[in-house]
Image 1: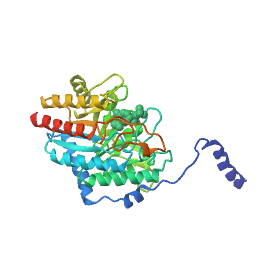
Image 2: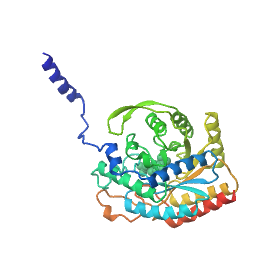
Image 3: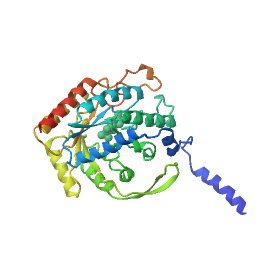
Length: 362
Ligand SMILES: O=C[C@H](O)[C@H](O)COP(=O)(O)O
Ligand SMILES: C=C(OP(=O)(O)O)C(=O)O
């Protein structure tokens, strides 16, 4: 009797479950990936110093400006490293005025459908070689950090951080997930400062609420370093801050919204810290307008406006964007974004100088 019931139960459960999951395959354990691609002392120094400099700037203890700049997404690690080498040189030259963190974004939150980033589909052909994507991502984070250039990533999938977070200096939660309890809990565990965006409709309060929620400790389900399901208990992340990225209601980098956001943070008992994303809703995803937004921010910062601790820019080697046809990566222009339009390198270089001048004169 017992044997029959025991045998019937899995079959019964089977008939109720996995009706839409077409395959389940192994994922490399985070601890194995970390052992294959270890952090050395130089990389650890870049991360450690990059994190503490970022927090000092956010807290107003360092007069420099945080600049998070780089491609909307990485689809070609070689082009990203080519870009990183140029950026590292400029970052070093401007280091007295700017603290430059390179956007190295591997996970893309889509409005509906589309390529979801290098980790999810590294071969850009719908083959979803995720283990390969994780290896490429970790290698690139090590390579960029080895140049002395700290990196910033958006965290989208709640288990991805176990594979790469030790090499990330600055993290972000995007506009589409700022309201998500799962992402707020994740933030509470992350070891780096994390910027949280206002929502796509332009609601800033959601980012303030997320900053508060992430600052508290939580208990939630996740995975441990060996990839096993685990219960995580966190102490909270005191280094979260708001990113103003504009939205459906229009841009929100104006002085009035900056002041209003700082007021909302104070009202919530939080430090008055924010950065402005010149791309996305603040420029209508138009890379030419984005340069204008950065010019305007530089003007205001140079004139003495306080409250903006950092600026985010989407930039790559070539300006604009191109459409990816899955399986046809050979058609792509080198160094041009396949997600949002980016400013080209020369424009970026000029704007970095402009932001540094603004800091010098404020
Ligand atoms: O930054 C990237 C995009 O704005 C975000 O992933 C949404 O892109 P989509 O609207 O093209 O899907
Ligand atoms: C996805 C991004 O932005 P947002 O969440 O503001 O749309 C991004 O910065 O890549």
